[in-house]
Length: 288
Image 1 (cartoon, helix red, strand yellow):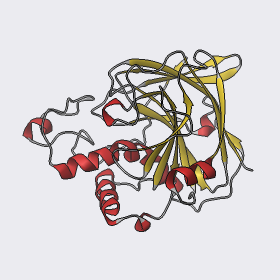
Image 2: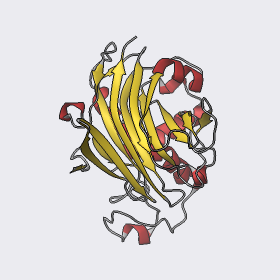
Image 3: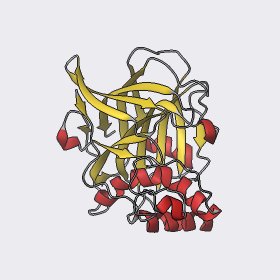
Image 4: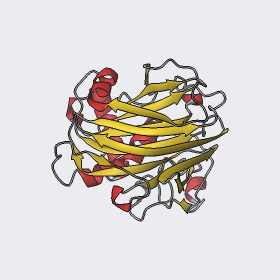
């Protein structure tokens, strides 16, 4: 079993010297480079709104920096095996105010399996596509969990947890967004010191929300969740998923998808404070 390590290219955003989402004030600044700092100091609405946008898009911004260096290419079929260094998988913190989900790669029945163990925690495991790839594209994977997250409901921001998520980050024209959204992007980009993905689509296994439901993020119009599995059916065994990325993007955002910048997985229980274990394998890109 190989424990995943935060990559050397991880750079904290320019919010505070130690923490991208830390509370403002002298007490926070004096806290030093702690890995986990409780948010006890109130913040102005400006910073709170930006922090909520950052919590998803900032974590996926690491895929944008690399992909933006060269033009997007046509879709290329490939397997993104967790045990293959060329796939570029790496853990990425969601916020230094949150505990990280523990990711480890192990061999099971001759294939590499990523095990995510969440204990009141949230972070991602990300693969950047270099260069970005244009749609049409299919994305397939297998996932498994033994239990759902008690009390989770992704329709409510205070209960926004899931045992299994697969995320896709897209490029696009930020100038086409409404003025309020453009301003949030600009603030977040200045804090992050890097480009953000235009949009993120999450495929989730929900506790009880029906399959096919699109759940908008409470924090930004540019993050949407699509329920592709729901309820206890299939728990404890591998389930295979195959999705048409362009079609799902159209359903979620109502427009055509831009180039795909990267893929991520996440098992999170930071909002409910519970525990969950998710398993992932066989992530692959297909070109119809």
